[in-house]
Amino acid sequence: KRDALIDTTEHDSLQTADAKHLLHPWADLSTLGDENALMIQHAKGVHVYDSKGKQYLDAIGGMWCVTLGYGHEELIEAMASQARKMAYYTPFGDVSSAPSAQLAEMLAVLTPGDLNRAHFTTCGSTAIDSAVRIAHYYYAAQGRDSKRHVLSRRNAYHGSTYLAASLSGKAADRTLFQYESEFVHHLSSPQYDPDIAKESAASRLQTLLDEMEAEIARLGADNIACFVAEPILASGGVLVPPQGYQAATREICRKHDILYISDEVVTGFGRLGHFFASEAHFDIVPDMIISAKGITSGYQPLGVVMISDRICDAISAGAPEEKPVFSNGYTYSGHPIVCATAIKNIEIMKRDGICQHVREVGPYFIEQLRTLIDSDIVYTVRGDHLMACVECWTGDEVGPTAKNMALAQRVDQYCEQDGLLVRPYENLCIMSPPLIVERSDIDRIIATLGSALTRAQNDLRAGLLH
Ligand code: PLP
Image (tube, rainbow, N blue to C red; front, side, top):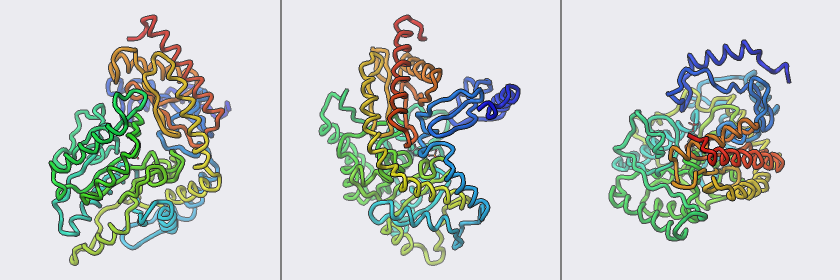
């Protein structure tokens, strides 16, 4: 392992380069320029290693995306072999490549209903943007271009382009940037947590549906193009809606001729035990499904919009004769190396029964995490299969207060000290481990997190938290 370490001088100069020249996504601007980046240097299986050789169990799966684990030789070989054959050629117009055509066909089989056409993008955000543009085009092609408003939810996260950021509804992410507000509308966050709820799931569901109907009536269904929804809100804090919410909102959309766009960037590719959760887990067939992240196990950047035949047919039938061009797409749409990686990822997932594995270890993960509820500083534990979250509190006020956030940060620090990476967000510790986690890894996550909670609680009692 020593060979793999960067020497101290190199480590220090890398930290300096990072501090001076990198602007990270979601950088803490109050510490911009500080030389404190955790330099992750190499990774294998469910573990990552920093430049001093310290091992961490990666309970975040990179960023919800590293599903088959790190250093997977077959994925590496798939990338290398496609790079040798042909790294890139334009995907525009009627030029294609074997990996993109083959992947599109595989995805058409994996997605539910008549979602048989793939439009490749570069990441989740660009796939969200593209899906909304497709919804706009779809209605315009029928001469109904008043249908342009978009419904989203508070606490949703859909990405970081101008439109995806505008659709996102997390208050904490709204900063000094500009956001589209004229045609984007946010419904309530649909979270329902039976452990802490003061009302029944049925009554919460009814309230959410009434609100959606009221918003549609206010805007007019003739003015609304689509509803964009994560089946479980991931970055918002693993927020699980009440039972039946997805199917009922799908039905409302159908009734009002509003397209239903399911954002499966996190819930897709095995995290809930299926390639796509929409139908298998939530009993809905959306009009479009967005995928990214786990589609390549995080080895290459890829996003895709899976589109129903019904929409595609209407788009091509209604395209203007003088300009029948679908003017959306990217230089790297359907990139051969990226698509070859995704194909291999799907082949491995099928061969190794990864979804089945998640269906076995997922409930164990949630069950074990729920034992932590006994801690005085855990307000609630929630999740589904391999996406979960522990919400911390000091015992008085609930939510992302300064005290609760400091407490969760302390938990996160102790986890990191003990070789476990969880994702700190506000007063939450969010987890989405690689799908290959074994029960023994889960036991280690729970033991380390449990000890970190105890130590943070002791600090709280001793007045050592500010
Ligand atoms: N949608 C969801 C549900 C996400 O969690 C994310 C990223 O975390 C995105 C979209 C945006 O994806 P990307 O960061 O690849 O643009």
